[in-house]
Length: 461
Image 1 (cartoon, rainbow, N blue to C red):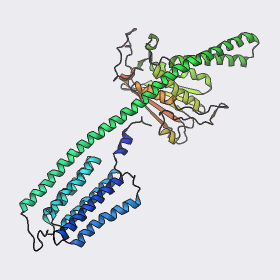
Image 2 (cartoon, rainbow, N blue to C red; image 1 turned 60 degrees about the vertical axis):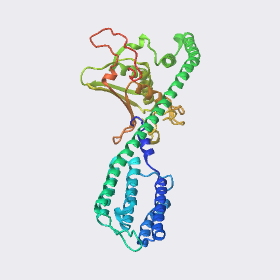
Image 3 (cartoon, rainbow, N blue to C red; image 1 turned 180 degrees about the vertical axis):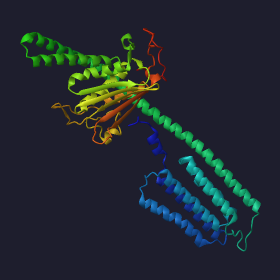
Image 4 (tube, rainbow, N blue to C red; image 1 turned 90 degrees about the vertical axis):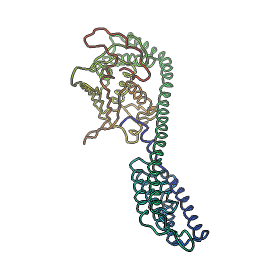
């Protein structure tokens, strides 16, 4: 699954509500009705009154049908909105045909649907609606019913004046459409930038809060882990050679896991540390082996392969990224039925890591939001190795995703798609120059500490 962005919901927010179109059309119907009634009875002009109100009634019937068929909160797609605006242009053209064509001063209302389209629809549809308006205006300049300017006669305006009105509609449509589109596009871009900024800030705020929780957890858990280690050593001393091989193996495994927990807590308190020990360079294959080694004693088969084109990439070891990758490998081992595959690949331009397991994979509803805080992939009733593991908090993948993406990587989540296969797939890809940022040259045995990263630079691996 691609990294979450704001483009999806920004496109949805761009769509206009049907209620907006319905209200605007009722306003237009009211204005058209008032104009026809005023001209017929107020000014005494002999208009084709019945035909005019039949055209206006068509808009009313459409409005009523839309109101009955769809809820007020329904948002129109771009195609649906363009069709409704095209109907408004055609309806206005039919009304103008009955009332003098371009001699009617209300012919400038051709600009209204184009203006609405420019503020809410893509440029292609606005262009199509503008061409429709100009085409109908051209037809009305040549063919229309005469407008009875006086109660006892009519007047024909010079064709030069009609041409001027047509030119005004043409230029007005073009200028208004382009201007409204530019203003609306700048507003949309600003809104999208603000939404993206709020999303990033929210994620960073979650991570900052978790940094404090991690330090507190490391402090609180240090004492009980030390106690467990002391008790384990005491049991080993007391049992001595009399301990059965099974018990001795269990005590040895317990000590290894306590050491591992203490190491993890140490990393949590120094994810952004600059200690010299963290600045060592490692090859890509050694990095993969470092991720796999702690998992080999847990009973799950791990297959790690490394291959690529050109020299093997090296990176400056970053504890934050190592923690994130280790968390993903831990999840793969926890959910795998029997096997986890880790493939490291590289080219002259890209470095990628793919982690696959043969477990149940991501559920569809979780896959849509995987990586967001407090979205867990663990079932509260899940059992591993005969023991109930319970539900997670949904923070592990969120932390891992954020730490890895800080290094400039792209992370995607998906499920196995080949027939007869199952399991989750996590793909992580770096541009090679980002992966090797800060690493020492291969022919140089020593390297200097790189300058501090700016806020625009991704963190090194």
